[in-house]
Image 1 (tube, one colour):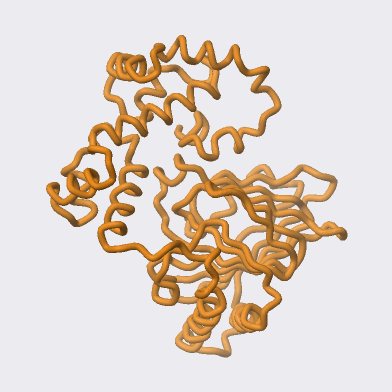
Image 2 (cartoon, helix red, strand yellow):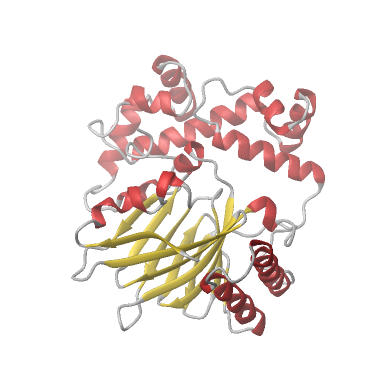
Length: 346
């Protein structure tokens, strides 16, 4: 049987950030979840665990938003894919490659290891309803070996998506009449149906990669996730990715950027965006330096000035003077692709 994951109304909606992942943070992944404070606040999520997957049904009379940034990924590297079946309302998904919209009846995919934001909007009758399946990425690869694009959305009018949704709904609504084994077989069948429906769509999957390209992507992803670790080194990356330091150097050389240059460049770019979108009262330069992986503010200042021809303090002042105001900008959209914020990196 399904179980209640969370119920939110006017009495407890402010607790949504702590409640949406369920008991002991067992569901979903780290991110910023918020609920629109309209006249009606009514959000209910029911969950059915099937093996290592979860089928979750959410019905709401309230607009909701969720954002996962690089800072969340670095703190919580949960690697799952979410398959969305939109029943009512719409999903507006923003990601690094652009944006997409899934209307009622459509199908969408989001990935936890890629930054994204999603707005769950109600329909004309002020109702939003979705069913989605949380699938560990390594399991989904059994059905879709190619890398799935983040934020992918497609009209679900095809017969295949309706069949997959029907199978998943039957499993979700089952009252313990089916054995665990049968439920898992049915979920796997639904995943296979979805895979067959999207496998030939060029807008769904990324171009097939060679083994060196895949290794390089693994290396770059590991570096991104651990960029704030001052101990990040070639030995650390090579061991984590299961390759030798020599092969790691070869991969990065083929990519055109040596390890140290790559790491410092990424750290400085994150720091520059952070400096240009924050005030001294929000976060100090020293704290930014530490949080992007520098061992000392002095070293950070020297490196920053070498690249940007201005010290961090001067750069921040110039950026603030050139912007009309930061007031009124939603925090989640300021920080989505910048690599962090003072609130999420506490």
